[in-house]
Length: 552
Image 1 (cartoon, rainbow, N blue to C red):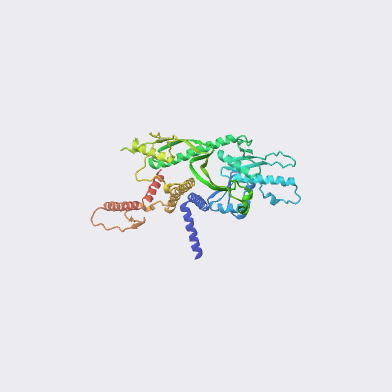
Image 2 (image 1 turned 30 degrees about the vertical axis):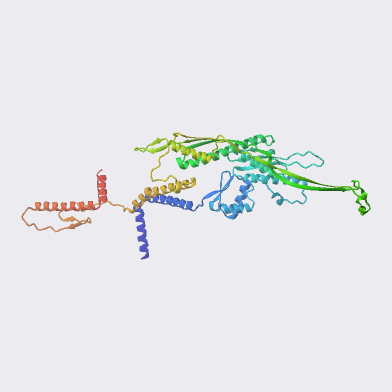
């Protein structure tokens, strides 16, 4: 029984294969493999983490050490470029950098103070120690400079003269730096690097630090003769920054009034960078203050016989021995001394550099645009009152001073570029519609993938499934006895049903009866064939196609 069932299953499978056909079966297999590969790619793509750069601009030594550490940590990575860029999953960047920093990576191809940890000082000469000290200083400075945003890599060379005994003159240290930068460094950034290196080396001044970029351009000579030029450049840079700050302030304020991009502001400032100190002493004779007062009284008394004062007259008992005395003299004198302090005011004024001498502000404001019935923008100039209000706002924003001779002008002119009129009821702020470049790329990738999947489903899978599920049509071949006589009729299933001839009811001739019976049979056959054609149009078409092929 089991063998019969297995043989029946094999026969059914064979019939299914024969019905489908080997070419169609091979095409289905190829399409199935492609679909499996495509959906497998989608699954792998969805499961693949989003990679971001861990480090870039690495040396080969640092790249090799970091890759080894990532393999130890079992973190997936990808190398880009010439191996100087390493990508890892975005959600693991922070922890990985902290772990690598604990291991001292990356070293940026420079040797720092860890050189003293790797070498034994036992038996090392002073020359080797000095060389290692210079190498360590150069490596640490290069790492610090390379940590800046605009710096890709840096190399530092130091010249540290040795102190010689019994020599008064001393050679100053110097430094030279080679930078690989992103874009172009500003003068302030160059001076910052000079001061950074000079502060790390004893006796080194910023004017003794020369800087060269990777293109061979001299950024700082380091000869000490560019002090005046540096000061002039610093003053110009400070002036430019001040002007830009004022312009940005005024444009931001006007953007809320006339619209974004509908106002242009230019600021010209004259700034005094001279530093002065003024000392002034003022004496006020009208403001007198008594500092001290002294009063002294003196009393004089004299008497004698002859009107003279003698020593004998002054002795005790002189009055008893003396005879008649003459007249007595007595005098009193008073002396008063008063000292006055004159009021004095001492004032020291220090005027720092950067005082504004004069400001000149020019503002150009666009007019108002309104849509006409056709939707085209129509320009309308602003009124004088509105321009006056804008002038008042600008003067208040820049700190206008008439005593300084400041000048502020606001002019209404039509801009060359007309703004796009926003559709009423819409918000042009963006909000949730603000996408980054990565979001746009990911969205485009997903859209292309979805389109490919839909194309495969509708143009490949659907026709194949439709052909497979549609049963194979067989030619509707009539039996050899389709040419029926009066002995039977054609049933709906194609079999012939025999009929007993009826006894003629009348006395019509036999040939007439036979013809009548044959006509009825043919009519019934035509009706049956018509029914079959209506129910099975495809099979009927195949039959006609076979007939035409046989006739040809």
